[in-house]
Length: 206
Image (cartoon, rainbow, N blue to C red; front, side, top):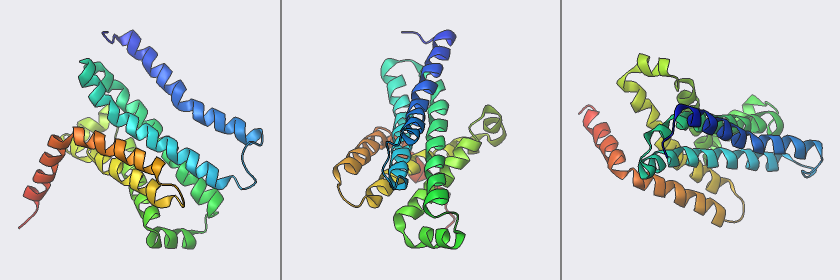
């Protein structure tokens, strides 16, 4: 089915609604007292999981567009990616504000000492850069550098599932499944990733 401008607008509206629904549910759950007496771990996991799901959905768009032979689908990738950043930022905000209560010394120590937090912070910084430069204006300003910067999504696609796996205290099946999906999506791009790795080493000074 051809994705006309009108259909694309409707698709974007549906995606915005679907991406916002978990947040609306979370607000309802908090107000209805559906969370436990210590809701911070639940909030962290809920927001982190949705950030990961939206990240994987972002990576699914290119294969889906190619499979359906509908390049216009690529135009919703930015929307989904920005929602991923929203959930990742809320996840980080809960950790900073509710878990560690803005104790900056403790926060710095946790980032340095705990490997999964280091990976999480690195991933968030990359997502911040991608979100901040996601507009067409930045694409024009950066030129070829824009694509090189936005290839950072592949690093995040690897780091966030590892961050999730490393952070859980029990149960490995769910983190393994997310990591497996991420690796499958990266494998689909293996030729591009190999070119990126080759170009990186070729560009390094001898």
